[in-house]
Image 1 (tube, rainbow, N blue to C red):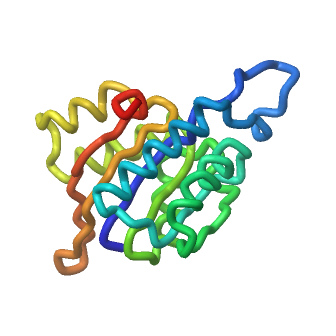
Image 2 (spheres, one colour):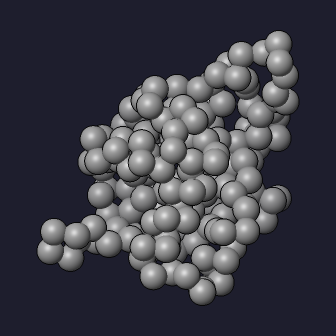
Image 3 (tube, rainbow, N blue to C red):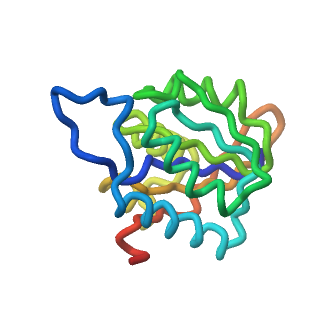
Length: 168
């Protein structure tokens, strides 16, 4: 893997006690926001080779929009990504993250925590992009990392954080 994109699923229908959280769908705005993020990634030449996607409907629907932009990308549906914490997200990446540019579509708060942990470990603290990442990670948000190997260590560099609101 030479690039990693951590993306929170796009905007969904509201949570309710009577609804199954796993089955919540994207709203029209969520579909549009996922498309905006995908087109911006493509504009920046961040072409997705592999997607690791939570089995939750909202994550699958987010990938469906993005998959139309990268039809040759492989996709792995992973139950462990549903509401996963940072450790589980890292484990899923180790198990399945084999493509050149890997997109992981999952959920907060674990996804935001994982993105902050990776950025912190890379020495990004104090940079404007790190402050933007730490501030919030709303639905449809994506954090981009360049990935390299230094001996046995994997090194991540936080490149940018995109919020759909910035692209509307």
